[in-house]
Length: 614
Ligand SMILES: Nc1ncnc2c1ncn2[C@@H]1O[C@H](COP(=O)(O)OP(=O)(O)OP(=O)(O)O)[C@@H](O)[C@H]1O
Picture (cartoon, rainbow, N blue to C red):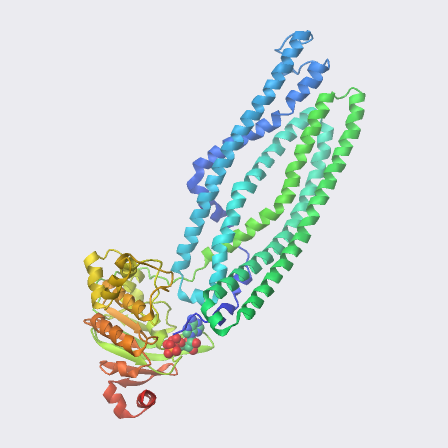
């Protein structure tokens, strides 16, 4: 059986490392926000209101400067306020301008509140949907996906990349949209105030935007590097913390620390490189803005002196100018955020696009209650092309028979068992259950027919009861206790502080190996499937505990087709048939006595074990 060996985490990660151009990003975004379109409409309305208020804010100032302090006529659309030359009326106009300013601010504030609340809501729910979508997708992928992908990196995408998208949606995106609307509104008003100034601004903007866009590509590339290094760092940390027992046992904290130091240093370098690129944008944009403002001040002063423009109009213009370049400046600043969000989205999309699922045939049928007759026909399989694990495996098991599989380590015993529930697909040959190719069964229906008891039972965080019922959540209380009884687990469970309600840790660390195995057996009894695969279920137990677990297993095996993979050949004495696997083929086949009589590989292995036991 291939365990989670540390070197597994150093397998190069081709998919994650070389990101292909990702299509359908827009489709992904649209599918994510679609359920929230009503909220988006509210956000859009509030955004329009906020922009309108922001555009209106400088106008009361113009009225005060030009019409209250100065003697200019009110614009035509305000001509209904008559007789402003009278002192008293001027003060009324000033009061109206002051009130208008407050009203604009209040309305703008209200719109901004609605905006930010609903945007945050959409961002939170979209992030929630994304997390769930990715997790579900990952749980459905074929196990071979996990042979080449580090769990730490996947974790980093589900957490960090999703958070980046969430922050972008709740903060940056809103500002970008408001900025864009503001630019449009302002351009109109500025043309109205003074068209030749405005033309100049419009002339400068494309160059600025081109500059920003040109740098966006560089920033995005640098951000990719940073995220990649961060993901590796999470993977290193995850692996280290997960293996803390082994690290302590070997006293190799220094090695692990060194690993982190190296990747952490690489992350710093990548982040600094990214910052170098990003830092150029802001000063360039600020300089351009200053140059434009200086020009407007200089030329504006001449126009005002020459009477071609009012002071109020120049003030509004300057205020707009400032605001006009704000979005461009923001866009420059937001380049980083945009790049981060794009990178995050691409990484997420890449996981979602992974098609490494075990496919269900179009006409696949529900298997119903299978009897458990299993046939392998010339099955061949390789995890990687260079290493042909199974070359030509053919055997058959009658329903209810107990079969043993043994052979040297790494000969492919666990691999044979993994093909039955279709964790992996054979490269050649076929596997039949009850006379039908397993590919013709619905996947879920097929897997329900099979229970596993492995060398180590994984206990999920939850109560003992939930753990026993893990494979069949609808199991009744009686079924659970009965199964625990048959698995020799009831007594020790009752001695636990909260009995069946006792919480067990993520990996069942609070229970001993033997106790864990008995929970695993109870779980298989509750699942009550016709096919049972036992992969070294007692290998990690001492002889005394093994006895009680073996008794429990005897109870579990009754009336089922059982495949037992084991190195302890004495456990196979009663098997109806034993398959001895060697070099990817079945080297020998027969009962314990037949194989001993034959005096070949099985007899040799048995002899070695017997001598070892003496
Ligand atoms: N996920 C995997 N990716 C690549 N190679 C694998 C994978 N799992 C197992 N292998 C390789 O396939 C071969 C057979 O492995 P398998 O676990 O089936 O052997 P086994 O007979 O059950 O071994 P053991 O008795 O040690 O548990 C070994 O060479 C192993 O290194």
